[in-house]
Figure 1 (cartoon, helix red, strand yellow):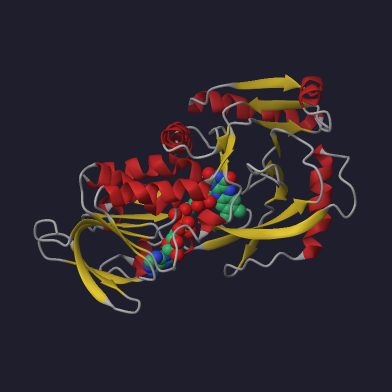
Figure 2 (cartoon, rainbow, N blue to C red):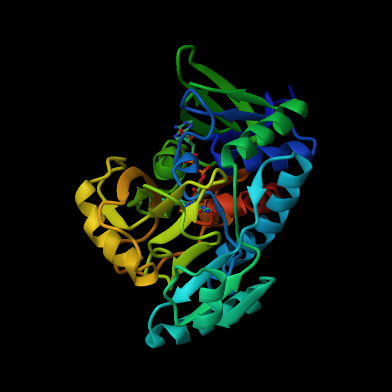
Length: 370
Ligand SMILES: Cc1cc2nc3c(=O)[nH]c(=O)nc-3n(C[C@H](O)[C@H](O)[C@H](O)COP(=O)(O)OP(=O)(O)OC[C@H]3O[C@@H](n4cnc5c(N)ncnc54)[C@H](O)[C@@H]3O)c2cc1C
């Protein structure tokens, strides 16, 4: 109990971002409750992604994505070290496979520099092939700070930190709605087997693909301030056989996504993807027919990919705020200046690099609330 409220802060959603927000609030000595509709933490967008720690050069300078990716990456590596969670700062090559792509690569390098990204080198195709002999490239941007990590171990560690500080997680407990209280704070309706109401001084919504539905259940939230939700499905294909590269390999980015890339997990299992397909509602079925375009994309940088080597391997769905062909908006951390409700931060559009940025998003949310 905390003063006249049950909690100092309630967070809706126990994905990487909701947990990071709860962690940041708990670190300030606040009592925190986390409501999660599912039966486990991190089962949403946070468990269907590339598990890449992004360096931060993709995002336009001055955006929240750029700022929170760079600061979030630094916080994340430190957190993983402190909690002995596995990661591999393996580095990544963004490759130009045609001379026409080189200016885009140079622009990425300049943007990275402006964003404060450390350890990037523009290298020749020859040097890239010396590093990764199976590659086809005319030039590459080598990011040493990029890595892969155990995102589930990370979320478990966040939960441990929250609970050590007295925070509480309620699983199978959907947020059903909230109403602002006279004099500040919120009364929150929590559903599930034993529906209940709780009061809180502050509310943070981190509902991932349901962010808009969650905000729509808060009394007094202006509907016109809730951005339209779009779903950007990304299918993955696993490589049957040995991983051909030791670093991650990405093409020059495409509008709305980073382009079909090569990642490997900590166990060395190689995957290609995710592609981008706008869908009406989240679904995770991978259509084997999408392999045809995947082969074509991958062979641009790895001509040695054999026919029949790719097998469907799951999909993720990006919580997007734009449709096909539209510019990609920034992360939205909407505070009272946008929706008029004191004590509330509503997150929208936390697609990539949300995992990398999660700890910095938590810090930014706390700054907006305290
Ligand atoms: C294909 C793909 C690849 C990606 N690759 C990367 C990458 O390599 N690196 C990177 O940094 N980022 C990547 N991302 C982005 C990253 O995965 C997300 O930004 C991040 O996981 C979002 O976390 P979240 O906590 O906001 O959402 P989620 O993990 O979806 O969590 C939201 C939670 O809210 C819960 N919830 C929903 N409604 C309610 C309700 N009413 N009541 C209670 N709980 C509710 C859900 O059950 C869920 O657990 C990728 C995303 C995709 C889709």
